Amino acid sequence: MINNKVAPSELIRRDFQHLKESEDLDTTDEIAELLFIQSLEGRSHNGAGAFQKSFYVNTTIDDIVRALKFDANKVKTRRQMLIDDIVGFVEDTIKGKPRTRLINGRGEPFIGVPDLKEIEVNAQDVLRGIYMGGLRDDPGPRAAAEEKYGITIGYGKCYPVNIDVMDKMNFDGELLAHREHAGSIEAFKRAGLIIAEADLNKLAPDKIRYLYIRHKIGPGQSDDGALVAAGMVYNKSVALGIFLADAIDTLEKYVHLYKDQDDDLGYYISKNWPGLNVSMDEVLEMTYMAAVPEELDDIMPDSSLRYFLSIDKQIGQCAFQSHLNFIDKKPYFPMFISFNRTLSSEFYTYIRNRVNSLKNLQAVVTSDTVIKGLEMPVNSFLKRPAIVVKSGVPLKDALEKMKAAGAEFLVIQDECNVVQGVISLHDLIKLMMENGKHE
View 1 (spheres, rainbow, N blue to C red):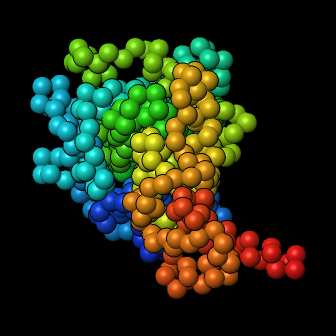
View 2: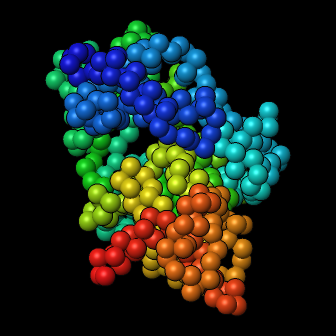
């Protein structure tokens, strides 16, 4: 490979340490490391963090694992075990042994996410979500959704690539991922760029990389959108199935198998479970609802598994938990989600309108409920402490109380103890500053 397109080991180690120290994920430390390893691939391509705007477009997870001096075999095996936990749940459900929790045989929650051990699910609905989630990433359903709904969706697939052939053909990871190659896939196979399954064992492992090759240019899909829309149209169990399919799609990028495991699992469900009861029209509809409009390509959230589980330290919650609260029609506090830092309340409004335009569903209860008057105790859904004050208390006094208690939110009640509004510490300080300017 071209050395100057692979990130230096020192930068990889520095960025990895930075992620470990600066981010908390809602999973175990071990699984968080597995996700950080994968995030470094994208960060090196985009020049983020320690890579300081230098674009190392041929850096792969293999390069990162070697730089960190991890055992590649153990890393791949552990990631595959996380996938196999989900596959085992599917197989047990099809055999008539459904579980009511998303846990493995050792009682551990899937992907180490604590909430999955507590949430009661309908196993059959989870399989429906996995089926739709797996197929919506497939080029076939995406192309069909484009035609049916008159939209543009970009798509592609990961393939085992011979890096020596890639160099000879003057390609790199950036060109394969961002140019349109739909008409060249068969030519790539004939040239040996894409390695045939029968030839995988004939090459040394260090000559093979599992790389994304774009078929068609265009906006992709929002994994956040798919999860939330599934929860609105169906239920939380289906939404969790969508989430698990997305998790497989992330984890499969670095395992011993070079295959599309979320897609394969979706087709396995359709072939082996007569009770699926999901039409292809529903798959296309879900593909449409998760599709990112071209005009919103720069702002629509599309969380990776890391971003789904990254805990916002201000509110003690991750995007995955916020999405589930929205689906459950529970109040939620606005937070910034995904890599483009989209405000969750704006995103939920968009998804609600998109779903309603197709389904004419009733609106889901949002944070507007809190603002307009919510009589439940705030502490029942706040993980961070809140201060409750009457509406006539001066802002200065309220701020002092919040600072003394280390609270992030102020709950305002009228004289009858009805909640009039909720305001964050940040917004309260802003209001006081603006008030001072006017004076």
